[in-house]
Length: 635
Image (tube, rainbow, N blue to C red; front, side, top):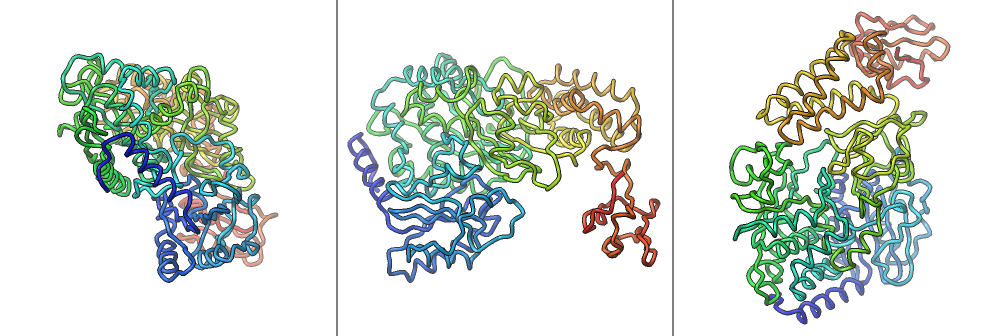
């Protein structure tokens, strides 16, 4: 491909790419982001490749990224000019049947299983038909009938699952780099910043600082050299938003980064990405090479005086490097530790120069704002939180996956309408934790809370980078707080005493309480210590690490009291505070519990129900899990 040097050349190339994309014949798309690969998508791709190799009916094959619904991976789309069909839980044999049906244009043998979408425990099938779109533009699926997708609004994830992330022309076919061409043609950096500022876009990485304001401060800062960074150091447990976008649509991130560089006057950009994301690194490297070949990176882009290039820094997995100043230190080859602010990176960042750092989701939102206008973006969301929020919904919920919803949607709508409610039959969702390991745990009576930056903070949680962990009534909230403290304690860089020692001491107190040795004084000390760590830590990791403790103390104080006053875990999770008992009236004397007990603690009594030797029992829960009649009671 020859380098594109003018707007006219770009328009011609983009038009040709769009013609190929929208006009292609029968195509099989296999979702091959990390979730799809983990579920066996490689094997499906090989099956399809064999069929394409010997095909005489114009069948083609494409690999695409993440469609969001992790629970029904591997996913396959079958696309033609007349229809778009989406299948989930696809097996190799199922894919053969799907291809046969597609070539015959006869899908009558596949059930329309929209109602089954919610059934997380449904057995894998030979391909379940989830959605159909017939008519024009069949490249885009009609998702309005699927509960998981219907409430969503795709801006950041607009191309995820719809294009081949290794083919820049598929990005061009869906307006890729059109926004960059627009800003270079108009040559108005201040106008770009004003548009981003007017859109209300806030940083999607945690604090929610206005993106346009950050860009303006950096442009105004003194200095000949300026830099733009992508913060892809996504280390939150249960979070994979940035990874999915990089694996599925890397050009959207590069385009946003180039627009930001043009706006502030930077000529160099750096993507700081986790080493644990090998596929994201691979797609990103490929995208950078292709963008250079087409002339969207490099010297004199599109024949203008604007020159800009991008490199990658691989992070070593330190959670604290998600903090801006620690990230900069790591990118410079120093120990990844935060430093006091001010000065802020916008004034003195990478190599001492003014630097803009935004995360993957923020950069990916820039191009559609430029193309569609500030008002278009600002119409979505709430007064203070514009646009959409991208969440990874995980935990004890039916529909786990990546979702993008308008700001202002309630937690209840996300958990029940999108997420499908509790995973386990008979259980009840008790709480949701938002904002990653440093977010707060909100109870079910807070589920009508609208999701935006201010409201979540007021409730004792935070938007954070977008992790959302849902837990049911079998989860101990004291133990959950301990889990998150264990993570932040291990990930503390150790530079400041409040975080280094405070998180460890809080964890020790929670360990004492969940072991049945806690006292009333421990609760008072825990609360005081959490407030101290929050107020005096050097960076955001320490300042927010106490949130799980403070929020569970606020909303689930009764569980702390039960652990201390009654030596009982209401959720039946803390091993030191539970015992198992056979309920005679429910027991069918099937012997299943005795067969699986690893320490022979289940004492059989002939035809009578067995008993459990409490001294021998190790609280492994195996008997509880296998009992077919729910005759094992946790007390």
